[in-house]
Amino acid sequence: MFRLFSSNMAFFTHQIQRSFSSSVVRNVVIKNVTIIGGGQMGAGIAQVAASTGHSVTLVDMTDDILKKAMKGIQGSLRRVVKKKFSDDPESGDDFIQKVMQNVSTTTNPAAAVTTSDLVVEAIVENMKIKQDLFGFLDKMAPEHTIFASNTSSLPISDMASATSRPDRCGGLHFFNPVPMMKLVEVVATSSTSPETSESLLNFTKALGKTPVCCKDTPGFIVNRLLVPYMMEALRLHERGHGSKEDIDIAMKLGAGYPMGPFELSDYVGLDTIKFITDGWREKEPDNPLFAPSDLLNKLVAEGKLGKKSLEGFYKYNK
Ligand SMILES: C[C@H](O)CC(=O)SCCNC(=O)CCNC(=O)[C@H](O)C(C)(C)COP(=O)(O)OP(=O)(O)OC[C@H]1O[C@@H](n2cnc3c(N)ncnc32)[C@H](O)[C@@H]1OP(=O)(O)O
Ligand SMILES: NC(=O)c1ccc[n+]([C@@H]2O[C@H](COP(=O)([O-])OP(=O)(O)OC[C@H]3O[C@@H](n4cnc5c(N)ncnc54)[C@H](O)[C@@H]3O)[C@@H](O)[C@H]2O)c1
Image 1 (spheres, rainbow, N blue to C red):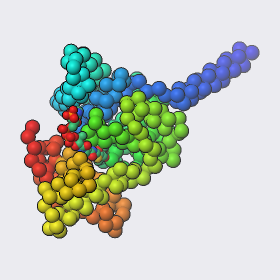
Image 2: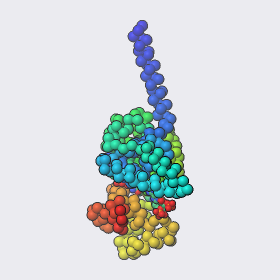
Image 3: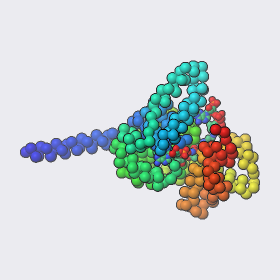
Image 4: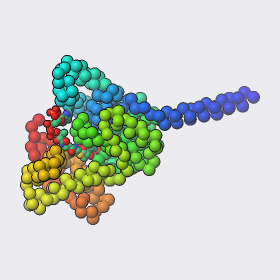
C-alpha cells in the first residue's frame, strides 16, 4: 500500500515538475542576461540591456578585457546622457551610475549562467568555438534559459545542435554601434519554439529596439545584402576603378549612406568581414559575390583590423 502511495506520489511529483518546467520554458520573462564576449558588440549589448533595467553579467577571457569593456560602456553612456539629459547633467550622472550598477563582470562563464534567463554570445565569428561554448554552457544553465547568438553569418541551427535545448536557441543579431542602431534581427531555426521566438521578440522590444523576423539563412537579411556590397567596393578599388576615399564619398553623398564602404568595413572589423566571406565561400565557392580580396587578406594578416586596432583601410587615433 505504502509502495503504491509512494510510487503514485513520485508520478504526481514528476508530472508537477514537468508541467512546472514546461510552463517556465513557455513564459520566459527575461530579466537576468549573460553576455559572453565583451568586445565591441558584447559591450554594446550589455550597455543597452543594463540601460533598460536588466541585470547583466558580462563575461570575457581576462579582467583587462572586461575593464576595457566597462570603460567603453561608461564612455558610450556619457555620449547618450549628453543628449538625453542635456539640461539636467546631475540626473545624467545618476543614470550612468544606476546603469553601471546593473552590470557585473566575470571570467567564469559557468558561474555567470546559473541564474540567467538569456545568454547572448558575442564572441569570435568561429563555429567550432561558438559550438564549444554553447555545449559547455548547456550543462551549466537552468532548463528555462534561452541561448542566443549574435553571429553575423553562421547558422544558428549548427550552434543549437551542440546543446540539448535546440527549441530554446535562436539568433539575436544586433548592429554596430548597438546603442545607436535600432534594428535587431531575431532569427528562428526550424527547431526554435514559438515561445522562444516570442520571448526574444519581447526582449528586443524591451531594449527599445525594432525587431525583424529572419530565417536561419546566411547573413539573414542585412548582412546578405551589406557584406557583398562592401566586398564589391573593395574589388572595384582593387580593379583600379576608384580610390577608397572617392568610393566612400560617392556612397555617402550619392547614395545617402552614413558611412562609405571602407569606413564601414573598418568600423565592423576587417577580421569579421573576412570570417564572414571566407565561411560563405567555403559553402558556395563559385558565387562571385563571395570572391576574396587580396587587399582584405593582406590587412588582416598584418593585424590591421580596422578601428579596433587603430588601423585598417584608414588610420585612427585612440
Ligand atoms: C557585420 C555585422 O554583423 C552587422 C553590422 O553591424 S553592419 C554595421 C551597421 N552599422 C552601420 O551601418 C553604421 C553606419 N554609421 C552610422 O549610422 C553613423 O555613422 C554612426 C551612428 C555610427 C555615427 O554617426 P555620425 O553622425 O557619423 O557620427 P557622430 O557625430 O560621431 O555620431 C552621431 C551621434 O551618435 C552618437 N554615437 C555614435 N556612436 C555612439 C556610441 N557607440 N555610443 C553612444 N552614442 C554614439 C554620438 O554621440 C552622436 O550623438 P549626437 O548626434 O548627439 O552628437
Ligand atoms: N563588429 C560588428 O560590426 C558586428 C556586428 C554584428 C554582429 N557581430 C558578431 O558579433 C560577434 C562579436 O563581434 P565583435 O565585433 O564584438 O568582436 P570583438 O573581437 O570586438 O569581440 C569579441 C570578444 O569575445 C571574446 N572572446 C572570444 N572567445 C571567447 C570565449 N570563448 N569566452 C569569452 N569571451 C571570448 C574576446 O576576448 C573579445 O573580447 C561575432 O560573432 C561577430 O560576427 C559583429
